[in-house]
Length: 390
Image (cartoon, rainbow, N blue to C red; front, side, top):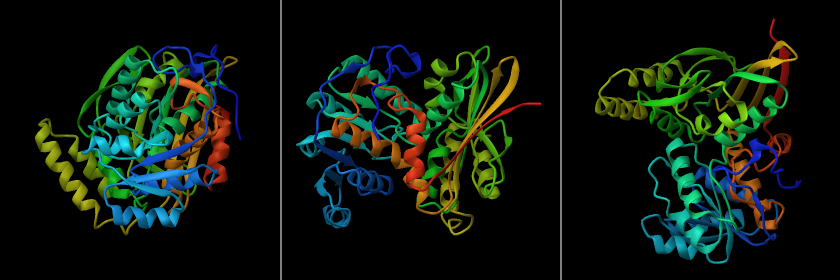
């Protein structure tokens, strides 16, 4: 399934940074997945390969990498961020690079730098606000007009942004956007998910509000949200997210909040306690304890995960609520949902189906309904509803 490049007249689809998208000659070639021996990297490679695109995966452990590559039917090359020359060598023969090496928060932009120098398209699955900012800054400074740079092709901010775009098209005015994430405790990356959420526990950051920007603390402002069957209600709290920087052009002067809640009440309360101390070092110590406690709790809970977006606003003088939900109901599906946007975008770039160039919004490279179909084709449940608030 392919589409024409997004129209330049729609500001919601413009590349981040304000430059107009440029259409370049279609290319065909290999995709290299950095971090391809990890959970998400393996899935990104597999999903890309299933679309008929040749794939190379990278990793630090050659023996393990070769074994995984044989199973996936792809090539393997040894590469490490600690050895920049290995990153450059891994890009030989590639037209697209997908960065699946986490954590992203403080990761140096070595892969992106080599991609810009070589003229290789770049995508990553980062959900880190700080990493997304650094990628945008470097790409804007480089002004690439022959390649595509797309950070954040993951559940957040890609899928969350597409759900908001879908809702925005059905409202005249948006008042509030709530993005809520409910990861399952028994998904394959449960401990890593908890660690990622803990990075903003107690930290101060800014979020869009109706009257400008306001400062908040991570993992505060609890709210009970019903994720629907079979998830049920969960207490969610504020976490930092790239959505805060990317969504204002779509939603205008609306409040945007991204909240998450862990499945086990004990862990949910434990993470919230990490946000209370004012001393940052004490918060970090508590966060380490919470991560350690999460490991023996892995067998408890379910593998189900859910992303819910609730957008409230006005249409024809009436108050409306638009809900978009992506549900992964079984163990393998959570990571599949995470990896799908990057795999689909990488295959389209490699085959020439995606020709928009420059720094591109993670939710501006395809139509929302097309991405929802890709998720459904891989087993995820996508529910979209519009209702009047009485």
